[in-house]
Length: 114
View 1 (cartoon, rainbow, N blue to C red):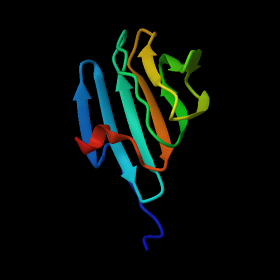
View 2 (cartoon, one colour):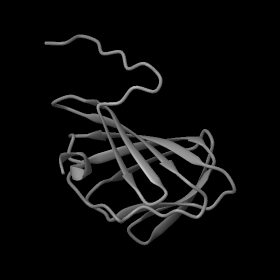
View 3 (cartoon, rainbow, N blue to C red):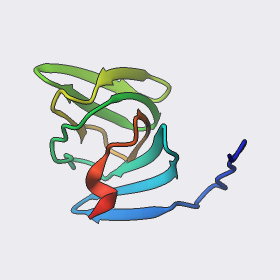
View 4 (cartoon, rainbow, N blue to C red):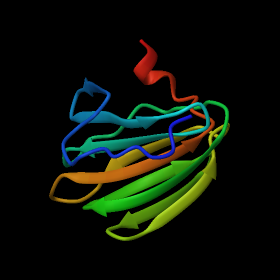
């Protein structure tokens, strides 16, 4: 069993690019995964829904994050927890690139499996 994993800045296991979005899978174990999402200004992610729970930390910029019918404005340093079974999406509402990290348990985000 691995006791520690170091991911250096800029490293990832897999990157998926969509229009205006870059999803970077930076860590995946049997219990959790961590992903970095980069959004260009005005870009909105697709809506996702999968098993598990998520914790998000806004690292840069400003996004409107939607979970079910709730909307949250997230800015640098803000954190959000939600159940992944609710449809969720993010939209960059700022004037610069937005970056946030998502830690999910269990690792059920299927975007990286395609």
